[in-house]
Length: 360
Image 1 (cartoon, helix red, strand yellow):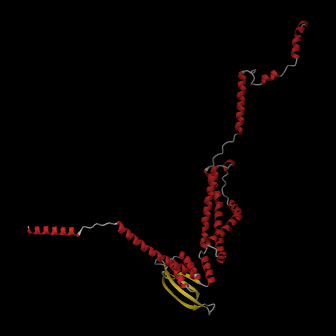
Image 2 (spheres, rainbow, N blue to C red):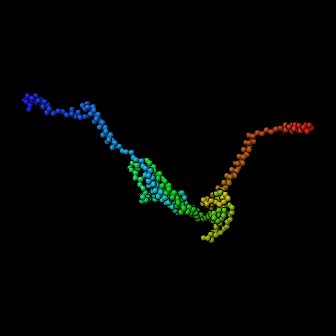
Image 3 (cartoon, rainbow, N blue to C red):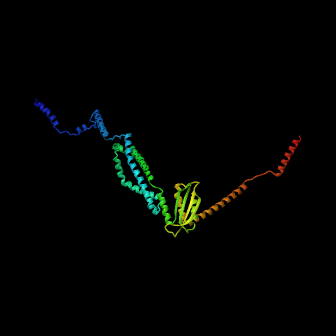
């Protein structure tokens, strides 16, 4: 036990320990950046904190996406190409059949060209594509095509987008090429014949052209009302302007079956072009030119007269040009000939030398 003297001596120290001390020195001691901490301790704490921060940062950094494999890209190209094959086939099919129907109906009635009918058919094709595009995609989905199983990062990569675009392009080209087979089911000459028949019925003339009537020649038959001046001249001019030659021509007057009182003309032309029949692709153009000549013979006659006048002036200008060239050559060309006296002297000297040689 402590004696009373020791208790008295330790009393000030005990009171000092019981006093509340400020916490600032303790907090300063715990902070690593203050000089109260030992240098080694400070280095250890800072290294540990940096490792923890690096680990946390590595957890939040996304990893680069894996490159798609060749098998995935093939599956993706196939899944993009198959729907476009159906779309291209439907697009061309609707356009061809709708354009042909418009050409045979509205085109004949209002005189629309084939290109205008094709443009109207393209409108119908686009409407069908918008209306039934979902059905085509659904049908392609039911085929059980393999899925590429891309991740979200791979799906947005550049190579996946380019492969999908290439597959779509190949698919639509294949489908449109298959749609061209519909041309085998369409009579391309029917619209032209109907348009020509509509024009001829409106003006009273009818023109028929055939490559099967006569061997080696194209036969053109013209029927129309009598009393229109210049029709035959206009027709022959139109035939000549088309590059064809008339080998035979005969005609007669007759009556139409519908009306026995009206007299009609019937002319038959046997034509050749470059020594053979007119090509099948050129028959429609020839028939149209003949019909225009029948419908407006005066205009064609005026054009023929103007053409002859231009030809005459051209021949006259060619003759004047030849005269001018001859005159210029005469002025620019100079010819100097030997004199006749010198020629006689040369001949006499030659004779003397011949005589002397004979005497010797």
